[in-house]
Length: 104
Image 1 (cartoon, rainbow, N blue to C red):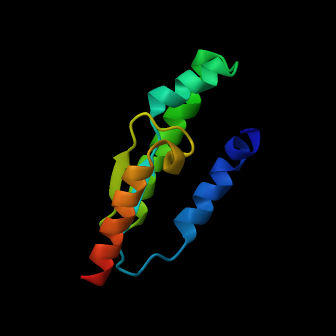
Image 2: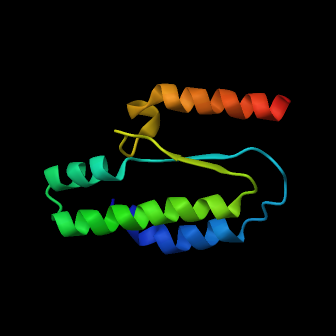
Image 3: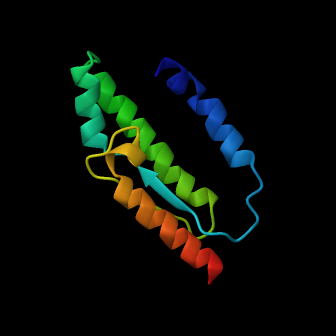
């Protein structure tokens, strides 16, 4: 997790600098902030640090929506870092929607 945190600024700048000029469907799925805070605390991270971490991550996910034209943003309830594992049906549903939009 330390590497993830220390790379945020650089990764955010890289993403913001990419030329997204095409019009294609995008869905951004964020994790459940409350669940992740709870998981962090259970793993020994102080609650205030866990809250700061997840609030920062939450804001970065929200900012990603502005990068893409017509992006859909949603948050997966009861999902941690591995959203595809915690909420597979949600991920499958969103992929199917993206495919349908692209083919339409």
